[in-house]
Length: 283
Image 1: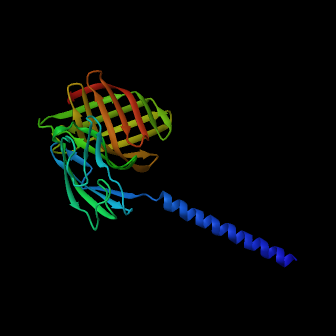
Image 2 (image 1 turned 120 degrees about the horizontal axis):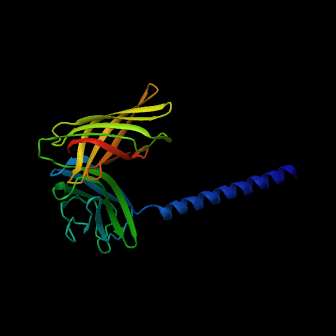
Image 3 (image 1 turned 180 degrees about the horizontal axis):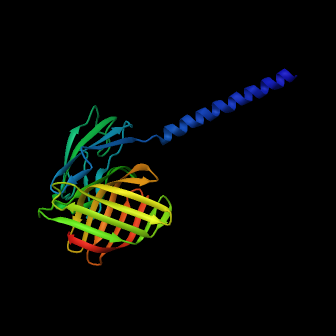
């Protein structure tokens, strides 16, 4: 009887496993994405006035999908939203963007802008001339009925400053955080040629009691400049107790009007607020 009971248990267990596998396969089939989006670009940082080339492609997984339209959403110091159809034709005004359909693979027309299985590929050229310097998030999306499929990138526009002048800044104090340590004895020294013909340099020192960090800045370049504010981007090498590591994409904001300076990297690892500017030249 023991063998028979064991056999029953084994059979029941096998049935449960088989049912679970079938349910999982059905679940994955139902929830498989109808579209697979891919997005690439030839660069992520551009001097204002130059262009970024995007390659946006869609793998169509269904035999009869419904593609309503494609959207472009640019969010940053200036915003723009616009749409284009599956032939690459702009549906509304899209300043700075041109869309060209590159290929459509082996596909056939379905419902609306629908296609039956295959690929769509677009070359999208972004001309930065009309846009202010700064950080931008750009979304390329496909709308299918009530569903939206999105691919995103972050891009940076660097101001094209023509004046052949330099910017020198020194500031101190403020409230700083790095590696979850708070600092109040802080100094920063910066130099950057505004024309961006060559890159600037600088240094940051953070100190609180026995803790001391130094950050060597390099590659300083201006993102945005007006009468009140100058924003620059830099890369840094952090040094602490003889150990060095990189901190990339450090954003330095100089409030010329209020003589304040702030620093933050894009990961949030480094934050400095309300440093007091005691020397500013050019800028």
